[in-house]
Length: 334
Image (cartoon, rainbow, N blue to C red; front, side, top):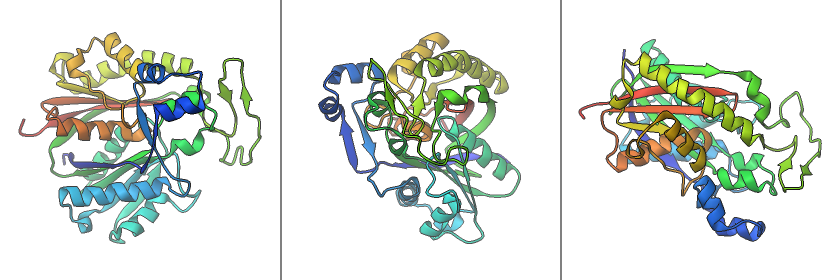
């Protein structure tokens, strides 16, 4: 049985941090420098008591309202997050209860970052193909702002908080085609939050600022930008070619490429490296930032509003893990 994307909605928290706000905290930077390098002008940040599960619930409610979806038809919830409310119980179980979904509904969390939406589509497609579910609510929700040190100006310029809800069903506007997935755990150290798991449950209070003002800490998000860039430049072109091959397509048969919205510089580098024309490469991060697993569904939502979802769409997610994945969406009746 084929699986389709039927609807997408997303939710952004109320608080907005602009580049002007960041420059007030870090006067050595300029608004133009931030916007020019990462392509982000503002990002939404959760409040102190707002969690990923809270945002996930709001995104799902928007999905039901915006698209007239009967919540009683949902028979599985998949939540992608690296910011769970608790070690246990599973946040997806909390969301099932908050949304008033049937108790015959399956629910689980999976821990992935920037590749999470593509992996979620593969899981949802498997549930439908196996006859386990007919309507899968795939939610991505992340609060990376809670992982970032207040003095970490680099990461604070890039990341924003958000959630997205996608209904994967037995019918819809886009069929989910074949996948290419990959993992290389040797890169784990290059994008990591060490504190909080059972290997390092307590704070080490080892924050260090180098001469350039770059911050490292075991208690907060650490990203080795150079190594992440090198990994991306090596893995993504191969990923795109493997995905085209698995779907029997040539690159010129892809109408739109929707990549994980990492930052403007990296995306432009990849676009040129893979030789994708600007008009077939979609950007949407200026007003939301890098929202981790939600970047692709947010971009898809906005591209659909602009009438740009026609023909074949190639999705590619890549990042923390290292983990990467891609698939093709084939638009129906286009």
